[in-house]
Image (tube, rainbow, N blue to C red):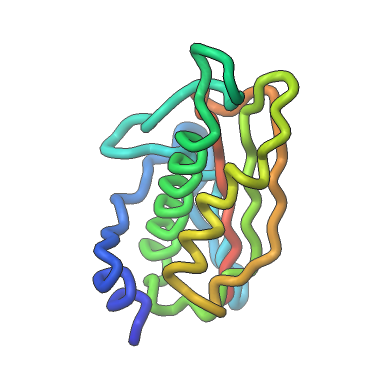
Length: 154
C-alpha cells in the first residue's frame, strides 16, 4: 500500500501548502532528505487557533486544543513534502521538532507535540517512528500556539 492509499484509507486529505509568511520556502531537498520549514496550524487559510498554551487559565489555549493544532501542523508539513517530492516517495520520518508557545509554568510540551507524532505513527507505522524535540517558547509567529518542523528520508 502506498502512503497516498493509506491517507485515503484513514480519510485524511492533505491541505494545500501553506503560503510562507516570510522569506523562505515550505520545504527543501538535499540528497535523500527533505526538511520542512516550521509549519503553523493553518487551516483553510488562517490559524486554526491562537494563544499561549496553559492548563486551567482562561483566555489561553488548552493542551488538548494545542495537541489538535500540532496534528494540523504535521498535516501542513506533509503537504509541503508532498508538493516537493510526492508523499509516496517518503521512506521514513526522521525527526520532528515541535515548539509550543507556553504560558509561565506550562511543562506539557511533549504531550502537545504527541498530536504530531501520533498522527505520523497512524499514517506511517514503523516508518513513522522518529527522533523528536518538544520545546517551550515564549512566542511563535502570528500568535500560534504550536509550530512543527519535519525531516523525512526519501
